[in-house]
Image (cartoon, rainbow, N blue to C red; front, side, top):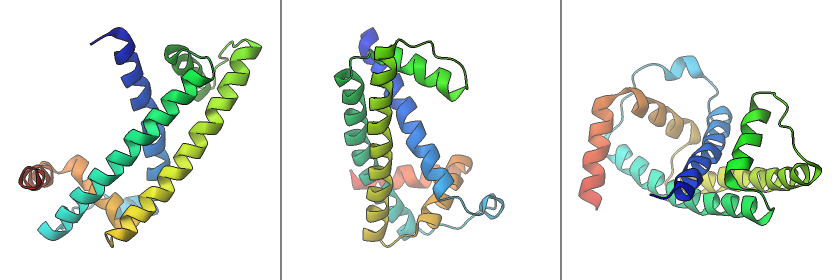
Length: 160
C-alpha cells in the first residue's frame, strides 16, 4: 500500500469518525438505558444488517466528496489532517492565509456532507421501518456483545 493511499484512508476514517460522532450525539438521548443488554430478533438483526450496508455505501460516497474537497482546495491530505487535529484539540494550527481560506472552504463541505449523511441515514431507517434510537441501541450493543456480533456475521454470510 502506498503511503499516499494509507494517508488518505486515515483521513477518511478521521472524517467519518466525525460523522459517526455527530450521529451518536444526535441519536443518543438516554445513554443510561442503552447500557443494558438488549434483545434483538433475527429478523431485526437482518434489517439492521441491510441498513448498515446501505449506510456504508452512502458513507463511501460522502468520504470521496470530502477527500475531493481537500484536494480541490489545494491542501495536501496530511496537512488538512494536521490542521483539523490541532483545531480539535483547541491548539493553534499555524496556518498561512491561503491555508486558512482552504480550511474554511473544506469545513463548509464537511458540514454539508455530515448534514446530508444524517438525512440519508434517516431516509434509510425510514425505508426499513427502524427508529433511529433503536438503530443506535443495536449499534452500541454490537460493540459490547460478542454473541450479537457473531449473529450479525452469520447473517451477512448468508446474504452474500
